[in-house]
Image (cartoon, rainbow, N blue to C red):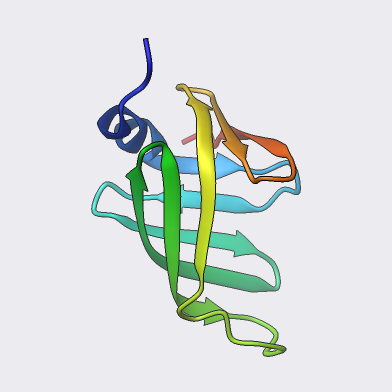
Length: 100
């Protein structure tokens, strides 16, 4: 049985650790933030047809290029209480739920 967008949205809420050690946090109000020192990003997120879309509204870090207004996209392959698997197009990435 295919996971619905509503189920994906519910399961995404919380903190996730990427293989790089960076942190992703999704709130149930549709906001998110990402911390990968020395940078941090935040904005709004939604899921449509299993695609996670995150619009960058705030950025703090080196000012090579401001990413404000950029949109990040990936396909959610699966999400559980412990793992989030994203298809970034060129690779699958597995994130693990951050302990609370």
